[in-house]
Image 1 (tube, rainbow, N blue to C red):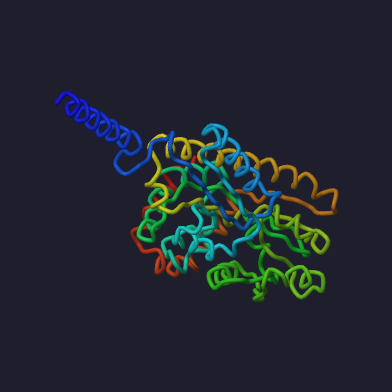
Image 2: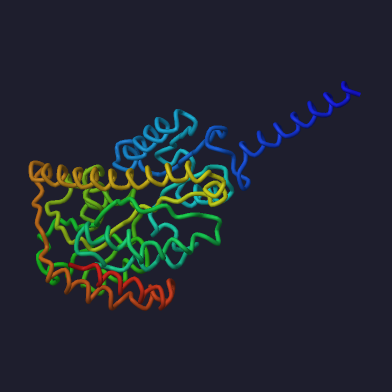
Length: 344
């Protein structure tokens, strides 16, 4: 009898111990921080010399250190996993956990993003950051949700500016008659409204077209102007700042929801730090590039804010209805309200 009682107590102890062990391993379907090994694969299109990739490397280092190696991050740059839309599908399927891409690349799938293609939305980078980090930027992450995606924040590629071989662009009138590259219907319509002549070209055709004087100029980010060596075929780089290109960071929602509160908190904190770092690196790179251009024979000039406002009126009047037809009136009104509210 005594032996049977001891046996019963042993079984009870084992069962209760196992129950507590199970509870320690799982809370609301989530494994505890100490038990769960996590792998995060991140794909993006930018090359390894860009501020984006450098910031992601710091993100990788910091998260792995703070998790004692339990969270393992692998980064696949330079379109190793495909183009932006390819990687978005991979994130949706859960093949990779995160990716980044300019919202302008996703407007066919997420038409709400078309609002960011409006011209002269922001006066400077700080203005853009306030809007993207505020109500408008957060609201524009919501259209990702039905796709099983979670928006994490916005890095940046920065402002697009105007180069040409004719004259510096100092006033809205200076654009008139200049032949430049066209690449999508809204961009073509806007520049034609400003008086430019557009020729539809792919990015790979631009350098040769500039060299052969088939076009007078083009518009792109400062770093792209430098890395593409357009300075070999152009004379003027005018800081029109007509379009600001963000770089959206997003993740698979099921993956994010599977994280413990502690792990998710760590990852989101380091994402915020990486975005700040990327923006700082981009600012530094922009300044360094602009400082190098005069030595390469390029005349660089600022375009006064008042002249940019004139160009904004011309260009946005031409494409406003096209953008609203994609993003919707409500989204458009909300973003424009927030843009004005954050203007200083």
